[in-house]
Length: 85
Image 1: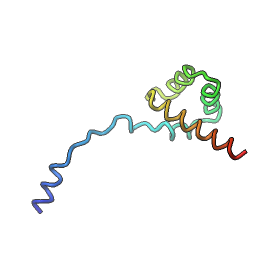
Image 2: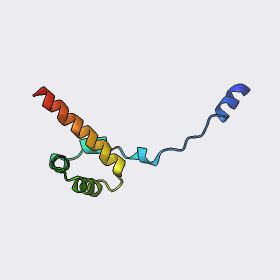
Image 3: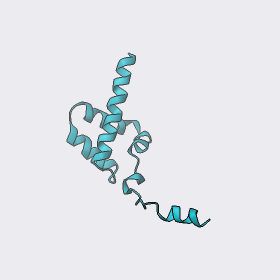
Image 4: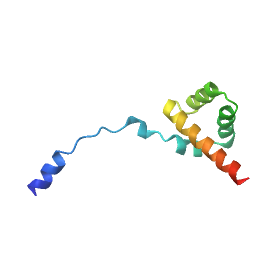
């Protein structure tokens, strides 16, 4: 019993990542279609600043990592759609 207690007490403490509270993919999936299309159009038309600004206005808690993550997902989805057609 004592050994188990010692094993747990020597495990490194990892602080929770404050960023895990916001999931940009889940938030995007719940967004109304017109806003999804606005973000998508800005991204595909090369308007990166407008895309980031719009993302920030919709979700003030988002950051540049969220913008990049969502961009990668949207571009991957577009590539898959192109391959299917």
